Picture (tube, rainbow, N blue to C red):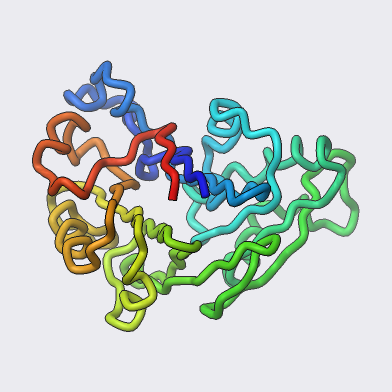
Length: 253
């Protein structure tokens, strides 16, 4: 499986509009972070988790010519706002796009993209197939997914384990039972917003502590704010098996 980090930034991205901090002024390409998303290439299957506002830009940058399905972690705009741009895949692939999400999230998509689900469908709008998921394992085009239930403050969110790769974003609490679903993953991607505590995201130290408990072979931090610090400086502080993800990073799992 090839994993590509399409975006590794928090909801505002990095740089932040109107900010002149050192990170936002950085010329290091690793400090330029689009909204968080990841692409999984499993054999001949192409799957993206979350379609944020930068979806079009990310897909063009990575030259993704085929997309078999979209999977959603939760309903926040920085994870769903790019849904309209699946139209290009509808046109090129001549089929509806399968969307996998919890029922609550699908209902939110129906409200925010009402024109997609209207009785009268304007020509050229996105064509989708809805696939409700729960906390039970499911398959996306034959690829097994194990949902991991996490909490984003009080909002229930799903992370996913696909083979030896676990992807968790927008979390600040994972129960002991859910950690057992993660344990044994060779690679874990986990959110780490900033160094200071936050109401709905793991801080850097909280993420490091969790990863040291889970002990994957390799871990990558994502959903990063400009408040975390520069990529170069923060990496110097991390254990050897933990790195900061960056936009465009590709790994084999």
